[in-house]
Length: 407
Image 1 (cartoon, rainbow, N blue to C red):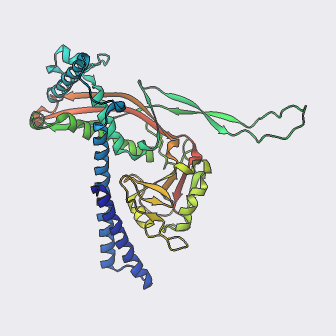
Image 2 (cartoon, one colour):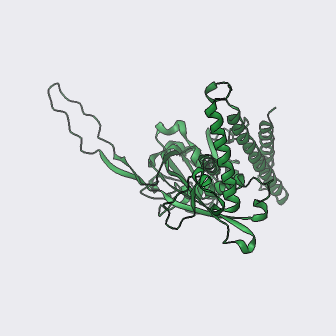
Image 3 (tube, one colour):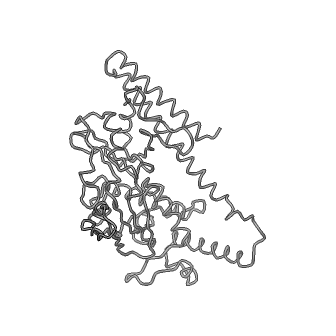
């Protein structure tokens, strides 16, 4: 059996055990005692760890499958002369990149600089447009760290610039019955506005020991790709959820007339307690046209409380995912977890979102700039790496979102 499936089955068993703890107390019409609560919390913590391990294993399997897959079904053939030349160029670029990361641009010769496409337009110098494979891997790591990118509509541009698109702000009135020779009724209600995305810069500085960098056993390129990608990804996720739209993305959990207004909020009956009826109502606050693409975004603390809720037939609302790649489903819709989703169940606070996240738009500037600082941290025997990306994000169609709030 696939290892990730085993982990998911183990997780399902732990969640079942957690439910038994709660049901035992419910049958006696009492709250959990301290020992039961400790047991319940541990079962949930272990279940969360198993899900993380399973998803990590599935992501690695998916990447391995991509690597092993023949391009367009064509079997490996005898290399042509130019294919060998391309391989040599790629190897040379990789060596030049490792030299850049280990020693800085001053140690690169002209051929190595050309291979790395140095950008001489910067007034102070020191920036390099990194090779496509490095940029692709870093962006992939950033995407993996931000759950929303797999669901949102991502637009990529070659250069950073504002993208303006027309947006329907008012539908035309209904068609009217008429006679054979009467004039058609003219519509006066349809209106258009503008939807703008303007990439904003995010940067991150990493510092790594020179001893580690110059250790031939260390893959410094992968280290920088992975850590910079992760740090970019978590900042992007946080702001796509909670950003205020001021020189940063407008998050879908931020009430705004330019994004998801308060008219899309659905309130629980209690200021502190979640209930099954409100969760089931959320789907019906969204037009049916979006139902086939709805996903929940929740914090794991909120999900843990939802896991206790049952419908009128005593069936739990939450169904654990068993098959590799599957997440939990809540009322039939998949669940995505984020530590940046709100977790506090207090009067007036938001606690979750159900949405067609393809109606959240992300605009990427593909250019990635990397600066290597070989001297600035010399006193601490470190090398600094500054990465820079530019992107923006915003909800495009408010009616595709339903935001849950405590009373």
